[in-house]
Amino acid sequence: MAVDEPTFTIGIEEEYLLVDRTTRDLARDPPAAVFEECEARIKGLVRPEFLKSQIEVGTRVSQTVQQAADDLARLRRTVADVAAEYGLATIAASTHPFSEWQEQTHTDKDRYNVLARDMQAVARRLVICGMHVHVGIEDDELRIDLMNQVGYFLPHLLALSTSSPFWRGVDTGLKSYRLSVFDELPRTGLPERFTSYMEYQRHVDVLTGAGLIKDASMLWWDVRPSARFPTLEMRITDVCTRLEDAIAIAALFVCIVRFLFRLRRNNQRWRIYAAMLINENRWRAQRYGLDEGLVDFGKGQVVPFAELVDELLELIDEDATALGCLTEVGHCREIIKRGTSAHRQLTTYADAVNAGASREEALAAVVDMLIEETVRGL
Image (cartoon, rainbow, N blue to C red; front, side):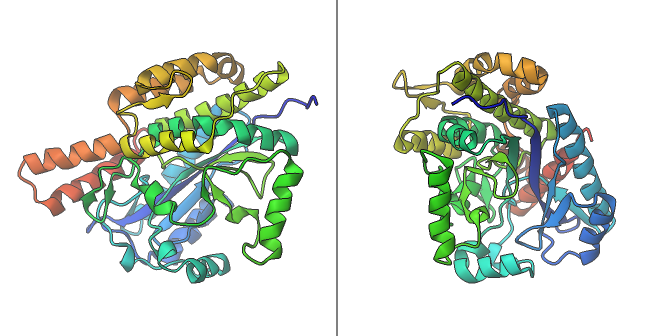
């Protein structure tokens, strides 16, 4: 059945960690005035997160990638400026290099109180931040159809975003340790596949009817139909330390979604691969980032990540042109060239140790790097 072309509007949500400028540790109980002042300056676009040491921002609904980029830059700068007034700083990283999760407390809010009660230690460990990208897909059935297909590309997006190599002061050996923490929650990972929006809604109704979840916003899949907006919401990525990396990944996602719609309009579709195969690439992205390549299922072999991105950018060239974001998606090649935040964190740590710094001093140097890069160029 033919459907009208979606608007492909875009919205970006980012979560940041609040750190003490002196100790570089997480601000366990930041003043309420920080959130109040942020709300006064950017009304309706900032909110507390699960932990008191976190803060979340969300752009307005944007018609173009450039509008979203401008909005996100303003949000990053405002939150950083307000935090600085209270001796704090923001870092856009998915884990803190050395904080202890046992020392954090959650925000006193009904939703978060329920989460803490139900999930116990699994929730208390959630000292992690992510980036979510919403793409406007107004038709319910189309949203489900595109969700079924887009899963193939999620590991590619994760690999480009990694920013969580450290956990509790230890190099985990993973570029995205955040995902290991988040996957302890139920209803995470790749989404289920549904034949229709009605089938999806029936499954949600079973969970809500049994009192297991309040609503569909408690389905924390890597991509999902948003429970609040007529959007397809991508959630797999780490939060990017550099703004231009975040915009590149957001632009790539909206282009992929438009590409899949374009296939459908031409009576084609992307092959839907089994979750067991996509999960192998998901793990490789989580473990290696963009260093060791992903599996090309058609070829049946691991292909260098740079080659996969070149092929992907060729596939979505028409879509990037139509959406006016060729430059933004092209920046993905620059991410591959100079590495993600995870690479720079590891390099900063190693350089500090090699220069004679202690472990604690080297970890503090990583925090300093993250503070600087979070607001670079804003």
